[in-house]
Image (cartoon, rainbow, N blue to C red; front, side):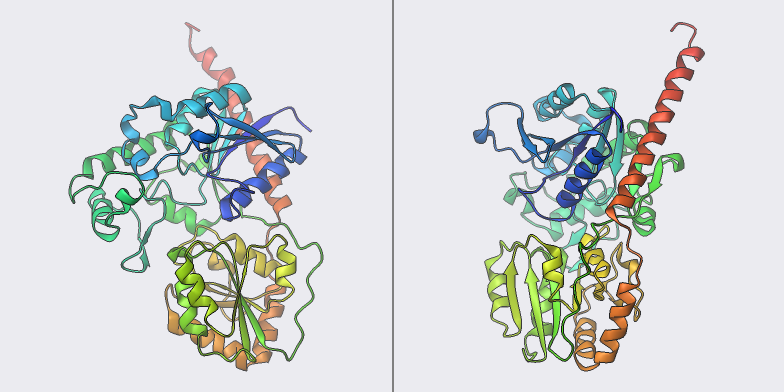
Length: 436
């Protein structure tokens, strides 16, 4: 037990959103609370008409949740080097003043200005940045070129980001409440944004947590992070309550996709693959929130596809599943990939960051991003070759997947190390300053 406090920051939290980083943030909050931390969570999802104050406080499972207003991410990033409207930052400052955290652990700050990191540091807290995702590499948060159906290779130059905004996603700014720029207008703003982020990582952020070495390597190509600030902390998940029983042998093969209709998730690859499959041979279960009615209708028109919607118990889902499909164009780690493996379900996955846990032909298959033909071929092989399916299930069951408890203990250890560094620095600096 301890008397330390941590404020987690994420763009949302269940029950407002059941997706990767909100679920991770909830798990962190409860896990750290079990270790004796006083835990709060800040989420920027408050509608001003819902509550007139700078923030609204709610209680979830003993964790205090602070809801503040969120803003357009593209505009926040482009104006980050010279934030003039300080009202955007004031609710976060009010939360920091009220909660008084020893640590501020930023899982993501989507819909908030990058200055939240500076505000957290100014409050006296130790600041950790959990680099799961790419709001610091992509002005629009997700480095995926919709028109080209391919992931971006990274912000190699301000001009490249300028062209991406003005060419590959035309009108996106207008649709999200941000201005629309002509090509060439943004280079100075983008350069200033990159320089400000580098300042934050050099001078403000105390520790940076990466879930995979592959993503750490990618991220640090574009933002330098001092070696002593980096922590490699494999992402863990809750282990199954009881290992789900394997589906009955001899029945049709059940594939499963869990996710949203966001193009980045690769859901558009599924209809062509499953459209002509006999439901007696295979089925595809789809779980997740679907706001795109056209995608839902297309999937539901396929005889072997069942759209199940949202779910609460992952073990109940897995009890029906033989094979997971995770065909994303871009991920930073993928929680659902590890959910499948931890329950002995092989996975067909694309080669995104975090999918390196799949050993091709051992616990699943790895295919190139966007390769519809390869996905179709692997699905067909598993339908026809049941001995192959059995071998992959054994390989999945033997895969070492870190647990959430293991991850929380490592995070706790990183907190303690950063706290020791701060205490040492606080003792040394006054001794070196004769005027102090």
